[in-house]
Image 1 (cartoon, helix red, strand yellow):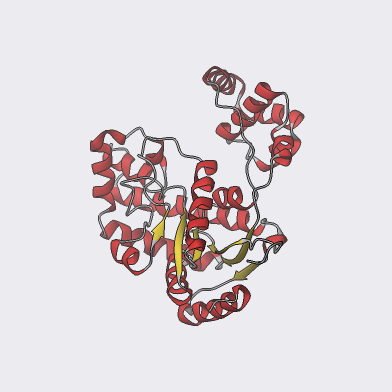
Image 2: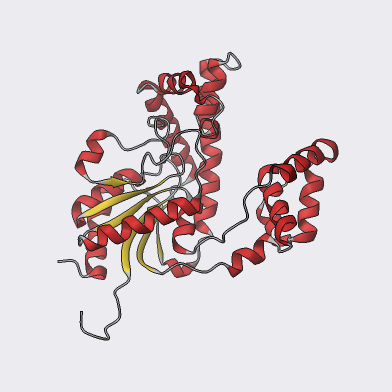
Length: 319
């Protein structure tokens, strides 16, 4: 590089969208066309042993294309967006240095936002404050805490559902610890070094998504999802936060005798559908500055992968 020439931004592709939208298949096809390596942007695939129920790439898929950011933590280990973002930036740098393209594939919007916009450094949780909030919620109701948050930080209250005690408590906790509203701290956060991104959002219609989710859960059950949950619980992880995830919670309740297997599978499909709707809403609110290309259907996978590969190759001047 010539002296005084500006450093080239780290480059990456992002394939985002709700669960069962076709992200993994498109990411694989695109990686094979442009010489890419996949960075999994999934808050559940970071846990070791949670394979079938998280849709983790199979050994055959990982043999086709290198995958990163899988199996980073034990099921009972705390993991957060900041930790994932730091790991992702290190991988992006390393992959770029080998003249290959990182392809971020996943549906965990908070992780992606941490990567491209940054997150503030929050004070550590305070068990005493959280216990007090739990007691107040039991006595006064969660809505009372939500109203308190509305008086302190109306923007945070507007983002957080009135019944979401965990997030309400955390926002109040940060206010009590710092004296500064959560929204103010977010705005004051130092933005990360920018990336040059080519971003694609798979955003199928809800009815198509519901069908895909139902088929996907059935395939997971056929692949041994129930056995995976039983093995994790037998290994001592029954109370781990990771096992409160989609499917793991419902099948765990079946193993405890609280639900029939049909009920557990049906509830998994319903809960996954609700999660997919929240994912669609999240990604639709991402800033226009990210230059997101929205794709309603990824049914013509080969044609879409070819089209995206041509666009990416032109934009990034791939040889």
